[in-house]
Image (cartoon, rainbow, N blue to C red; front, top):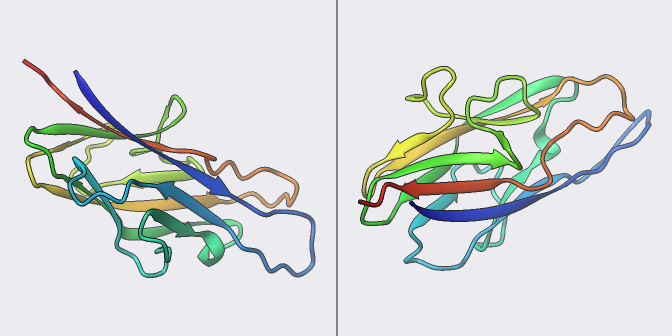
Length: 157
């Protein structure tokens, strides 16, 4: 079974306050390679970063004590020559269809409970991303992952 993995990271700021101004982001490092087997692109201007080699989710736009969802936020394209199964993970936890998770991804064709997407050759999946910041305790870690991994696997015969 072939595997392609792409890692990322998160930077957060938090603390007790009456008023706050904070810079928050989630960065996904990518290779600057037009021939990459798996293409990643932020589609939402609200979430996009300035560096072409980094996909950045700017968390300044999140609502406090709420879940914020960005529709069609991330596109994943299969640039390879075989069908792939794509999953998104935070360590061992799946982030696709992860209702109630601090950070989750969803796709229109994803059935409830499914944690992977099938992508044909040159097929693109547009994913929604949601951030659950429903804690009212300013000292509580909201749990947005420090790293995520996007994995594309093929069935080798």
